[in-house]
Amino acid sequence: MSAERPAVLITGASSGIGATYADRFARRGHPLVLVARDKVRLEALAARLRAEYGVVVDVVPADLTDAAQLATVEARLREDGRIGILINNAGAASKGGFLGADGDALDLLIRLNVTAVTRLAAAVVPRFAAAGQGAIVNIASVLALMPEFPMGNYGATKAYVLSLSQALQNEIGPRGVHVQAVLPGATRTEIWGRSGHDVDQIPGMMAVGDLVDAALVGFDRGETITIPPLPDAGQWEAFEGARHAMRANFGNALPADRYTK
Ligand code: NAP
Image (cartoon, rainbow, N blue to C red; front, side, top):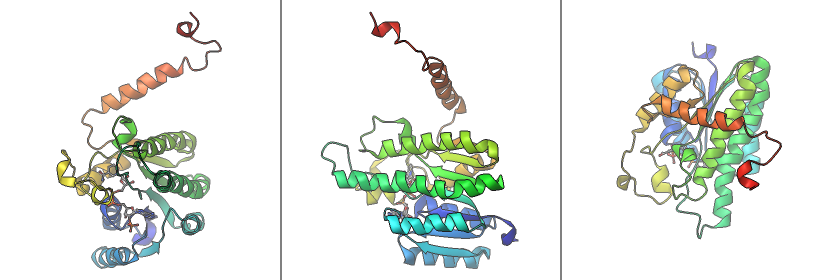
């Protein structure tokens, strides 16, 4: 039965949101390709999922900030026709604000949260578009909409992921490919400890199972933007409506009166 379902390649599958996606897609009977740096954790998760759900699970250890290792995952996405869903999830957060931030650390975050996400999508888009099917899920963040939050360039990387997802859906959605951006709020995972934050000091922390299950409801509905903690979808629609209303003026050939008087 699992052979009939598309395989799902999940980056950042060794913990948190990615490991939970792996569990949920295995439960649905999908074969999996799990990517992260920690081979031991990936192998342990793969063994559990094979035993529990009887699905085929491949493990691909890779540091996605390393161009050569990223290229191996890109090649897998290009060449493995079984893979029909990409979960672009691997990511990290910044330790603090921009002031005093180290340039190399800012660059490393861009390589993981922006470059890897982009290159992996680019590797698979031509195949999905040609097949007229497939799905790409990009894990962004509500911080894509909260640039005032003091987390260095993290919010900016997630604003990029949101914008890229909308552009991709616009371009390849009509070709039969589903692109979804998921915007989690604060979710209880290792990302907080890894970036020097005390998870217990942050209010309103969502359980990772609740987050992924809600994201999958949005996925099954064919949503382009899924914001699991947002109760009123109309607020997102109003936000998009305001953007589209402005857009009507962006093509004006002359500066607005307020800049000429
Ligand atoms: P997490 O538990 O720290 O998971 C991050 C995953 O990314 C791990 O599997 C990690 O595995 C992998 N990873 C980190 N650096 C990598 C690298 N250089 N190469 C390959 N894999 C790498 O955190 P999470 O919360 O589940 O994060 C998943 C996504 O959700 C991220 O994109 C994050 O920005 C986003 N998000 C999280 C929250 C939240 O509050 N938790 C909120 C909004 C958005 P290895 O260490 O084994 O490589």
